[in-house]
Every structure is written in structure tokens, then in C-alpha cells.
Image (spheres, one colour):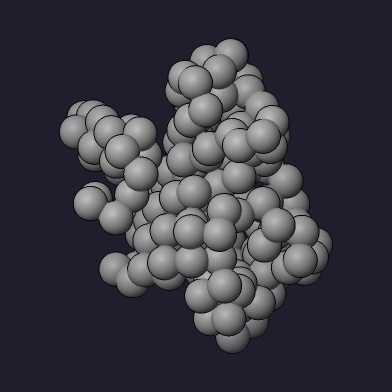
Length: 169
């Protein structure tokens, strides 16, 4: 975390140290997402997270890119993109194409923050189409945002997923 600004490193360390409950149930069956789980300090940041996902779903890669900080750090599937330009050059178009064909369900969201930083943690499921077949996955996402000159930008993203458990027959 020595490459992150000190406040981002502190927030990231706190998130990594927080206990997370493992779950074997379908997250779609969980409670409906609610803004009440967000601290007021995170409400504006959550709007930016939602706008980022909406831009990907719409295929608006320019809009999605504009919501990222120049030095954004994106972790996904064991890999890392270390800037907005690297993400735009390597994975942004593919992520938009994926989102356009997928059905995403948000089951839980929480968030907090203070000062010029906020974090948003989301859990849900995605049902992408691959070779004409649905491949359901459980998803988790953490985004850290920084507000500069009154504008929130995403400075860190961590995406994780696994195969959606199937109910016993």
C-alpha cells in the first residue's frame, strides 16, 4: 500500500482487516439493498458508483472513464490496472461489453467515510451470457472514492466473484 496516498492506504487497510462472513446462500435471496446502510458521508460517493455501473451497462466508456481518478488502482481476478489510462487501454471496453449482456442484482450495500474519502462495499450476483448459456456468479465489490474540488472520483476498485452456489435438488 506504499503507492497509495496515506488516507487511501488507511481506508484500504481498515477494509482488509474487517471481518467478512462467508455465505453459502444465493445473495439474490438476501434483503433488498437500502440506502439506510450507507453513512451520510458515503451517499454522494454511492451515486458515483451507480453512475459508473450505469455507464458500463450503457456501453458509455467515456462516461465510465471520467468517473475514475487518473491514478485509479483496479484489482480483479488477481490482476491490477494501475491507472485510468491503463484500464481504458486494456479492460474498459471488455467490461462494458460484459455488463451490457449481463443481468446484475445488488443484494447488499454498505458504505462510510469522512473528509474527502468514502468507501462503498457491494454484494450481489451477476448472470452473464457466455456461449449462449447463463453463468451465474456471486460478486463483491469495494470502491474507494476521493473528493477533490467538490467532485468524487473512484480511486480504488476491488472486484471479486465466484460461481453462484446451486440449491440442492
